[in-house]
Length: 392
Ligand SMILES: Cc1ncc(COP(=O)(O)O)c(C=O)c1O
Image 1 (cartoon, rainbow, N blue to C red):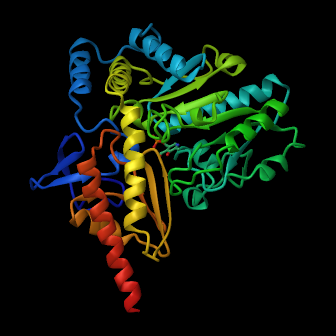
Image 2: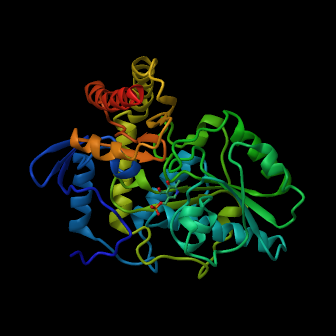
Image 3: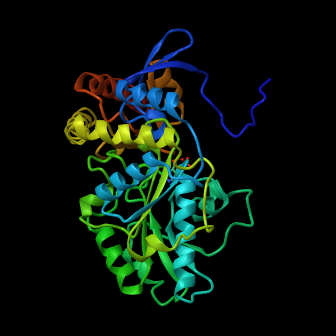
């Protein structure tokens, strides 16, 4: 009997140790981690520099309160703002909390403009978190099921469709649009190259905030520090989490211009958000990304994996599409493939499956030999599926 609530259905494995791209279970077996705790441990498990930073900060000071100045928080805020061309940051502990802050900012923006029912556009098939406001923002009925009444005033539109957004331009209650630059949880859905640029134009025309949820795409995952940098734009609000602490829980909501000044004393807060430990860990993450030229590796390995997958899977009819941006990778099949989770685990590889897509979020530090192992195992599993299909 477990004393845990039943909201997770874990695979039958427990890891006790991590080192770079590998995890070791309690039987001593080693696994290649091509999921990174769902896009978190991009710099690998127990990165020596980050471990050192955590150790030294733990010896110094773990927690005070946001009622006092926190030096590392201010240093991290400055570093993030300079990287993202933003003005101010609020620190939280997770992606959902970072998005909660964004949603509250959007509502304040509305009220500042005398809009009494501020409404936010979000996308179908999006994922923004599991708190009441963020699951209401999420465009997925499964995530919302059982939790009515939802937080109101979210309107869901099709992703990657400007027409779908333009249909709401006459709605004077709209104050913001919140989007993932690439939809992660729904299976790495990559919009057209100019989608975000055009969404920004619509936002600017209508005084809507452009709020980008980069909880999954941020911190180097796509080969740029932030995915929206491929578009040469800066949003009004930007949310981060996952890779920012490389495993130490931290979320951040960044904003620029007037949107950055809307939270005033007493309007928002978090006991743990931005504590010295989390901020110092995140500062060491940013340092490693820069010093080890991690973004170059992401771009190089992305091209390498894309080319290997397309060569190896060229004649496999069960593969419908390969989607890849940086090290966000999906292989869409013509059938549901949930059984591949266990089959990959049996071959000592950690992956994710979303409906008909295999989803990979390998470490940003992955090398060619590790990528070859990942590709060989995945292609082997897909070849088996193809053989079964041909027997039918
Ligand atoms: C794009 C996006 N936003 C928000 C979240 C929620 O983050 P957290 O689980 O840290 O609350 C996730 C998590 O997968 C995500 O992918």
